[in-house]
Image 1 (tube, rainbow, N blue to C red):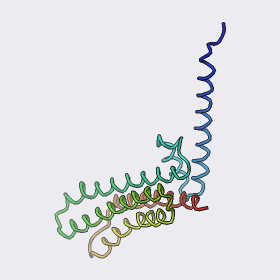
Image 2 (image 1 turned 90 degrees about the vertical axis):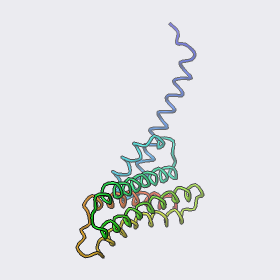
Image 3 (image 1 turned 45 degrees about the vertical axis):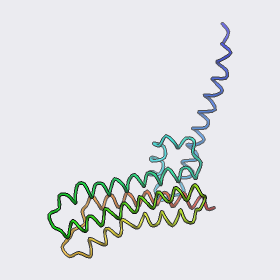
Image 4 (image 1 turned 135 degrees about the horizontal axis):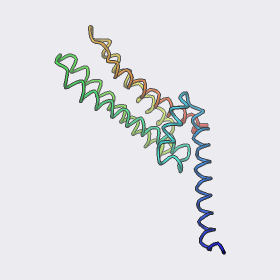
Length: 177
């Protein structure tokens, strides 16, 4: 029985797609080796459907969008779960300020993506560093108010955003080479 002629072009397309995904897995792994959080980097990038077709700049943008989602979720968590439950007006203000800082972090990461599109890597790096520092400002606000304890969940979210921003910074370092 002869193989239908359509089989060969289909086989060619599938094999090139598999090679592309395999080679992009190598790009992801090579890129992530330049970061301080290899496992986080690989996990986040491999789970994003845009990664198989992304170049290094695209991978940086994907990680920045992961950071945006993380910062937005932290701001929403602080506003929704903590601020509404707080009875103390000082605590409410501190929590509102913290939520605002996470919103600013998300905005900075949005600007990072724009900077990447413009190939303005110095500005992208500056915006990532700002995004990485905003949660630290939240921690410092808590420290300045006597008697307030920095909530463990906010601390966990701060470390998570810092790690994500660290990955973006590492990828940006690779782009600047």
